[in-house]
Length: 523
Length: 117
Image (cartoon, rainbow over all chains, first blue to last red; front, side, top):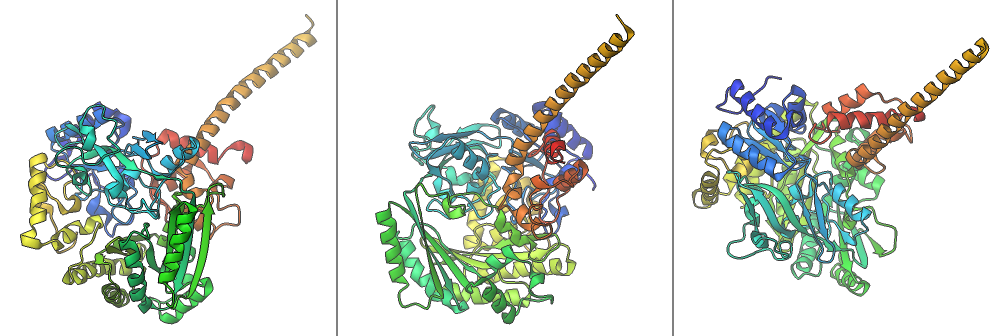
């Protein structure tokens, strides 16, 4: 594996920069062997070389980060900050721009919890398991909200608009106060944190004047070194309703039934309407069912559903709080489904004092859902195509049919879900693949670009995407000659004139590396 | 002092040295294994404890009980290092920023601990 320095730098100049970084963090925390470059690459990538880092450096304090940022400016070295680098399906630890130095913040693991107010202040290296263990160890009566694969960073997930399953599942909306190292090495605290020693940093989001928290979400405008997050009090009860539905076209009325419940705040958690493969791919491999190429035929889908007694779609809803409220809410939700052809309904109830329910609905971190990457056998992987839709049944069904037809056309197994927001749907489609099948891998890129193009025709844009498609997706946000992208890049160039911080993140390119934008051809 | 006594004394001394030295080595080793166990719980158990992704996938290939790495007796340090740094199957590569070489060595000591083998 050849050492690839960042664009515009010789190997000798790059090595000088690495020595300068080592003078800050010590030799042992600068990683520049071939093995290091491989470990910080994206093991799910269609083409790992396209995003191969030049090296990595792992500071442990804010002061070290500031020093590295100043040196990066001096040596013109692009940095790619990661929290824990577990954003699999979106690029993992790998940088958008080949040769960048990964700024690995996974050693930064400080946690502060304000039990009374239900808030946490975490450093980027704090994983969901770390925070969960901290809460358990200290017997703190707060619950986490965790994503379906919970090995990542609490901070990194919120900063990438990751989601969970409780009423606190829209993680980015629970951010309250950030500490950020800016591209010139300055340090800023947002919201009430702008006042020294303010006891309200994690209590009131906006502070005084413009509120900047979202400016540092999915952006390359700063390195978040502390993140404030609101947490949920352990509820008195958690009541659940799990439903299965028989037919693909049931999606329309399911969406139209759930949407008003979400809009009016009766259902405060974001339930996801998921297809049969969501469960089957975790529990089994494709070879157990079918040995031919192409999308699975309906007869096989039926056999899988029979085996696991699952619907074409499934829906799980959870209600949290005092029993009087959760029971009443469950009653209202059940009434909304009255007269509908629900295949099966299962009720559940957890009360304080019961053994913990080991599920993401109870805020317990999990990793088993990623077993689905083994669906095809071989070295498995996935990428996600996730357009945002209106919370409307007809439109959701039409989008489903378009997407399903493309899955069949490209010979891929459909793995879709519709996560119900308050007024929108995030339509997460996982594309499961086998990296040891070159023919399949050749199809994946064309397939993904086709899905983006299809959605764009209807005005549907993605909420988050893999490194390979950051430019492509940014390009679909095209109002007024891409005025938002132009604004983002004006801000980028003003804050980061040397373009050292995560060039290309979310399609935002500093002038220095603008020629690396790629909206059409191969990444 | 009789020769026999000297021999006995020397023998007892040697035995004492061996015993003390042995118990010192053993204490160090136990400490490393214990630290390795803690690190394993912190860094690996999310996937390799019961209910984790790694355990789920290994259960498809190993007899019951052997899907848990902590129960395995066939692991060796070289294989562990290769799997951790190179990834294996669904397991991603683990970088040195997340698990340092020193930490990996301790985890390896735990997974290959003698008292279990």
